[in-house]
Length: 115
Image (cartoon, rainbow, N blue to C red; front, side, top):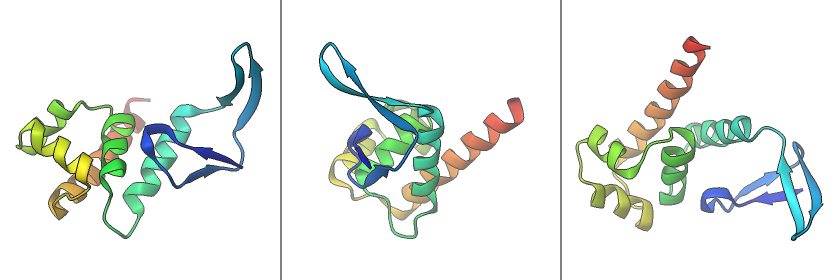
C-alpha cells in the first residue's frame, strides 16, 4: 500500500492503480488514473458523515472543482480571507461544508452531461 499525500491529505492509502518506478532522481510513483483518483477521493469526502476538515475542504475546492480561493469566495458571497481562514484552521460553518459538497456533485454531474 502507498500513502497518498497530495493536497495535504493524511488518511488516503492506495492499494492499487499505481506503480513505483526508478527515476534519475530516485524512486518515483506513477498514478495510472490521477483524474479518477481525485474524483474518487472527493466523492468519498462529500459522502463522509462528519464535518470536513480545512484540508479536505481545500482539496475539494482546488483538486476536485478546480476553483481558486477568490473564485470560490465570490460564489459563496464571502471574502478570500474567510475561505483561506476556513482552510487553514479547519473551522468552517455548516453551510460552507454543505455547499462545497453540493458544488462538487454539481461539477461531476455537469461533466457527465458534456461527455
